[in-house]
Image 1 (cartoon, rainbow, N blue to C red):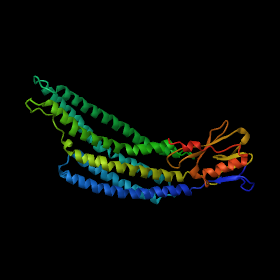
Image 2: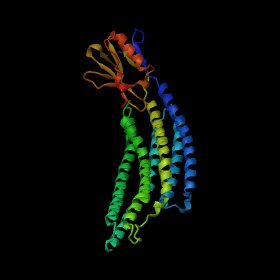
Image 3: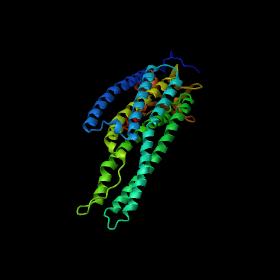
Length: 376
């Protein structure tokens, strides 16, 4: 069996031009986000300056490492973006996989300040426990329940951070392992692998944002509330929770781990999607993809064209996907796995395929595109 475009049949060919355009647009979008980062850096500078927080020499070691690792991630992401943008449309999957690994390694460095903060919280829990032991010896000390509750919250925060770091580390390893597995399957689009890589890259900065929020919560809310209950009105003041030096850097953590990382997360996610788009470009086959005629549909298989006759009642529909290469054409065949191919891989639009099916079957069959109209 062969494709014959000269017998009044409709033939759709593979074409990578639209996907190439999407990938190039993503590369430009990544460079445009540098402007957003620059504007946010100016705002952060003025806010930190007005809050008298621009004292790197006085920052705690965890805060210093936070600033250093964010700088490292920024530089690494910029380099990867430039390399990925320059390699769009070129056949070099090894380079793209290396770029993905570089992104995962870069984002993994953000776990270092998280680990430092986790150690500080663990040590602080022990300090608060010693404080409670001394407090229990005081007769009629108010606020004991609040102090014990505070200690429980510190311990829970320490355990949650340890568990979260372990989960994120496993996700980073999966992000490195899954792309080669995906690329080892011919024509596979790697939906799960690409989603895992994107989540793995965003997880460390997200965890760092949680640490910034925890510092703000403990330093400005929980410690103050507990001290207030330990020293109620009419009671001699003088009993206060021990402090944690990193709590004094709460504004720096809020700015760096909050405002900056939110923007960097969006930027890194866009770079990862650009790399995956470059990999998808290398998955686009060549030649004829789909043929529609009066006898049925001929789909391009790995082993060659396969005909599905109209009397076999094939179901032809669309399947929605948000990420590139987007929604897919699905031809469900009796006794065989469905044939799927992204619409972006074709040189025609979905409406053109629908018109061809209607013409070949005299409106007896259509391409069901209603799944593409769903919001979720």
